[in-house]
Each structure stands twice: as structure tokens, then as C-alpha cells.
Image (cartoon, rainbow, N blue to C red; front, side):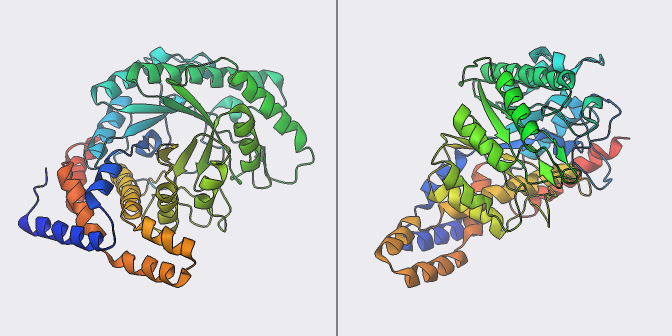
Length: 423
């Protein structure tokens, strides 16, 4: 544990005074941040590999670059890596699993036959560490997805296999939610689409809607499982046409009362994912938010503090949406230490949320309502210089995690003692 120095205490007290001048209660902001739970994505730890060993390439527009040593090769190694990351991230968080991370005892289990028992090890581990779990069917890296089509496939037998897989995953998600006492979000994303000009755009979308209806046919207790659907602008191999577009899933989520997943990397670079939050929440009770960082395209770079990330955090806080948005990370980078990637991304997101919570929103909203746009802009700029860092350090210390660069030394030590010994 990092111990707060007298200097840190003085810096925090000074920060509280400065924020109070702007009408901001720092302690209230810290309490609010402590209630935020982020779902870390398991696939950062092993480059989206999973444990099936189907022999199929990722495909589906997914590409993990880099060959940094020490990636997890088993569920136990992956869990160890996640535990290490969580010790360096302040707050109480969750883990997001893909179906391809099932533990089947080295037996080949078809994806349409997966059961909660194949994830009992994950549930036991999560319960021990007081973590919630989220879940995803895996519609890629499989012989029946080799052509890039799954739920919208023109072959009824292929389509049925993936329908059965999706239905099985909902039951697994519900079992996770029931066992852990916190609802699991089971999120459906598929790669289906066309590289070049598509003549029949209607047929695949009608098949997808019908397939989803079959997956969601069995009623499940929302206290245990919440269904989400995730769209995308394009992918490698589906540049010209994506069946599950944002517009398709928005309509589906509204009419079927599902969560819409907004992935911050799944839109045109000139679109603002932040602006979509308040727009879709006028019609939906809840949404799922996947936070990523696209560089020129949906490249799933590690999340950093950026204007785009801060805009998302501001929208969540200014709109008072935190109790209606389930937040998860979604990126994969094999060019750097994978545990460090989780920590960088999660801490960046939490810092952005803290900055939004320390904004004098009430003052700014009053100025806006009064039509004083000059003061609104001036105050927005001035508050950017307030001592966020001192408050962040205090939050980390009180939650028992390292401040500043110290967390990286913990990762380096783990890399020397654990990850470097992996083949």
C-alpha cells in the first residue's frame, strides 16, 4: 500500500479549497467515483486467444499486433494477471468474459453445447474476489465463421448453430448473475458483412432479426442477465456492408427492450460516441458502453486520457447517467505488457470520470440557462487548470493502490517474477 505523505495531504487539502471556490464538493465526487464499476475485458490478457484451440484464425476483422512476451496461456495464468491489474486500479470492478474462455477439461465442447459448468471455475474465482462477471458469445475464430457470416448466414444449418450458441450463452450469463448476486450483461456482437458492394442488403438483416428473436426467446430474470446488442460501422473484410449496423441495433434494442452497446471505436471518426449517449437514452432504459480508442479506424488501442474519452465521461456525469450505463473496456494490444495495458486504460477512464465529477456543472448549467455563453466558455477553460492530480492521488491512496509511476514498478516486478517465466 502507498502511504500518503504530509505533502500529499497538504496538496489534497489545497485542492479541496480550490474546488470549493468553484462550488465543488471533492469528498462527494470521490464517493461517487468509488461507486463506479468498470468491466475489464479478459481478451487483453491473451490477445483474444481463448482456450479452444480450434485452429482457426481470429478473422472477423479482428487483428492483434505485437509479440510482447508473457501472455497468459491458461485460465489460471489469465486470472493471475487480472488479479494483479485489479490491485493497481482503485475501486471495485468486474471481468468481461468471452465464450471461447470456457474451461472444458481439455475436452472439445461445441460452442452450441456450452453450459454454466464450463465456467464454474470463473464463477468460483469471481465470488472469492467479490467480482461481477459479464459475458459474450464468441461469433469468430471458428470453422463455421470462416466465411465471415454467422447469425445472418444464408445456410439455415450454420445459422441455427450460432442461434443455439447465443441461446446457450444467455443461460450461462444468467447463471453467472445468479451465482454472484449481480446481473451479468450478455452482449451479442457478430462480424457478418461484405467486403465489396452488396446487392441484397435486406435479406441478411431480416435473417439477423429473426435469429436474434430466437436467441432471446426464453425469458430470463433481469436480476441475473441483461441482454445487449452491439453494432459496428465496418470491419476488415466487411468494409462495404455490415449487417448489424448502429441503426439496425438501435431499432432492435428499442423494439425488443434490450441494451444497446455503444462501442467508442465503432463509428466514423467524425462521429461523437459521447453525443449518442443522451440521444439513445431518451428511448432506452439502459445501455452498455465499451470504451476503446480508435486510431484512424476501429483499431482498439489502449484507452488513454484524450478529448474523446473526456467527452464521454462528461456526458455520463453531466447527464446523471451512471446508474443507467454499464461500462466496460474493449481493446487489445500485444506490443506492450498486457497487465499494464489494463491498468493504463482503467486508470485513464477513472481519471476522466473524476475530472467530470469535479467540474462545476451546476454553475456552468446556470450560466448556460441564463444565456451567458461567454462565462460558460471562460469557466470551462479555467477549471481545466484545477489540481485534479492531487485529488486522484488521494483517491488512490485511500483505496490502497499506488500513485504516480509506482504502479508500473509493481507490474515490472510481476513481469520479472511471473510473466517472464512463461514460454
